[in-house]
Image (cartoon, rainbow, N blue to C red; front, top):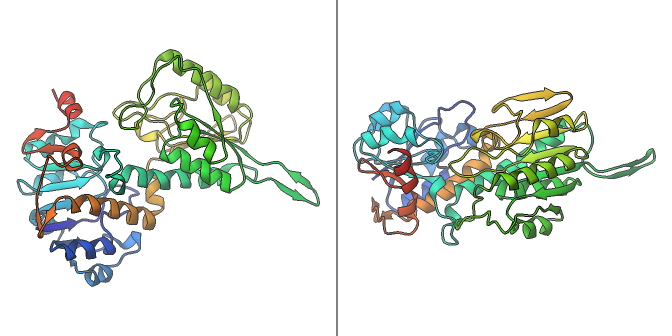
Length: 376
């Protein structure tokens, strides 16, 4: 079985699917690993590092694609790459299967098998494979650094001979992995932090990090699904949320948003009126850009100024920390692959409680129920 690692081709992508330490583990499991030359350069891994780990390195991208039994990637392969893969080949990467299900059609038509890292179940056993959480950790951390650079004041309280400098006030919307990491990082920098999430259960995690948790009356509505993800709530609840956020925004130096619902547009949390009420010099870091953004004025992939308020909507913050992002993603992917490798060969057991739910398409068909519904 040949596992292939290609150089990522998306703009501003600097991560690599497998790093040398993971290659060494896969080789020990009797798998053959072939890496495109230069694939790990931006992630701190040279061709020599891969060869030392037991991989073969090649500059012939077309040949690598055609010979791949398993193609590991960070992002969904391009249609051109998909068309060159042999029938029955396996793809493992982020696929955006619930946000962009129609883009899985080329894989179905080519009768490939594709596993989406986004579909890995949120169970205790699968934690070591949870690439969404790994990348969210990096994104939450980096978002605070961006904010600290842009906000025209220091985060910590400082007492100096010239007087006391009050701490910056940070509001984090969405207490998932990215949000909690943003809270922790902002607290480390000395800011006064508040957190908000429609899931009442998130309050304990927010408070444990030393932040204040903002609560609203949910009217008995359950805002968390069985997998631990946020689910859509009523418009009445959203209106209450937006009113509370607009009130807090007036006294906040920075807002970091990370609220998302899988397969849906990101919820609108910050209205134009809320932005208008913010102090000049305030900063909004909208991490929900890939699914439309949490701020009404956000422009995905851009940084804009609205009457003195900076709104940044980055699309791939994890790639700005490529060494650690690649290490974590590679470990997630390798642990997932280990579920399917037996004596150097691929064994697809769809009864496996991690492998089965993570499969997006197989043998000319969509496998996940929500993908099936979207393609009807």
